[in-house]
Image (cartoon, rainbow, N blue to C red):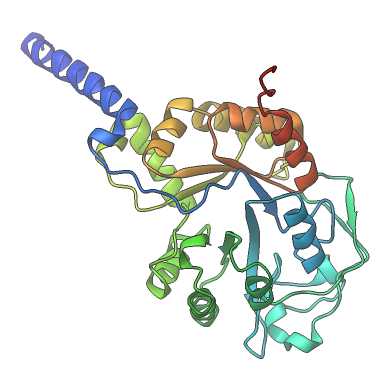
Length: 318
């Protein structure tokens, strides 16, 4: 046992020191990807706290607040139109118990007159525009605005059509593939490999594991965005579990596990932009940017714009 410790402990110590050294200086091992854009203010579902989610009115409102990124989800109608909708089933949004894929685009119902803001329980959004929009309409209206397009299901026709629209409007560099599922992301990357990708859930856990094992500096990272929930919102505005005890446990554990400045700094230095969702309070804005995040996804772009503008250093006295 003695000789083993004699050799193993120095080797382990050397490995730890080497890992820490390259964790802080990733450019010595990797050439960082240079992003085409830096999204400081992202509008979740187009800014679903200030206007009805995913409507053109919501997108226009967010752009008036100089949003850098529009976050949205897509589904395919029966007649093959790519529409912007968070839910597959229209019950919550429209009160109609039908799936998007069971209706033609012209048959899609209007949104309800008011919708509860998912990440601000007890708060409701209203708007004069209640129509669902096509992804093509958003690309045409905001041709140079970066967007994150999430695909929730392994629908190859949907993926193919999104990829085709992105190419048609020449916006591959500013449109992000997003999905929670690695099987879906694999299809997305095959359909348009020029689009930057975000981490799936399993890939996110893999990066965390590599970080804690000290191996992250030595592994390549193909993803360009880590779009992750901020742990401090669990059990306040985000309730992933029906049991309050599990939510409390998840809040404590994920805060310790994820909120690491050294991890976020390492990813940023390698060109991976970290974006936290979905934050609607100033204290959460502070926490996210304090960790070194590139940006924040919010339901309230006006509040985040006010916060960002107030962070500007005062002009020097003349």
